[in-house]
Length: 138
Image (cartoon, rainbow, N blue to C red; front, side, top):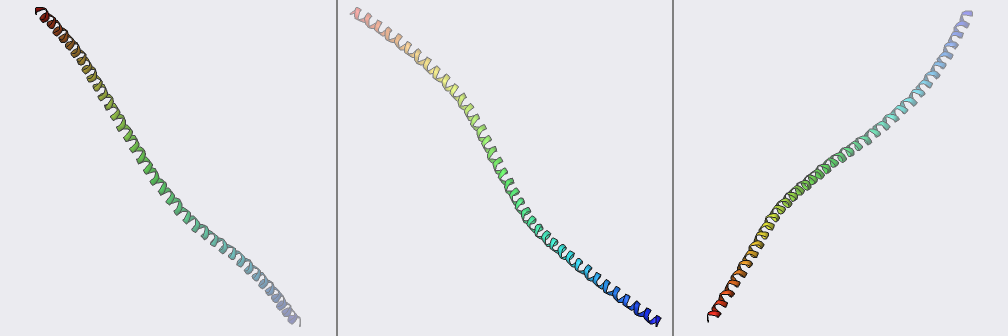
């Protein structure tokens, strides 16, 4: 009977230990399930963030591309403006040179006109003188 009691005691101890281990296992299983759920939630959140970041990356790339195109266009416009200004300055310089030539021509023409007036006055006076001489002869 002592042996029987010992066996019964051992069986009870094993049963109690089994229940304790089963409870501990169930607690660990619940904890692991909560942790897994939490990890899955974080994983899905990360996937959502990743998707948002991909969309934002595409938008940023598109914006950068547009800005690059805008800058190229602005550079082209600025270069055109500089070229036009240089051309305008060259034309202005040519016009100044032409103006100087015209000014010289005008001065020369004025001098010739003055000379011609003097010559005409001289001829007129000469003719008057001849007219007087002719009148005196008559």
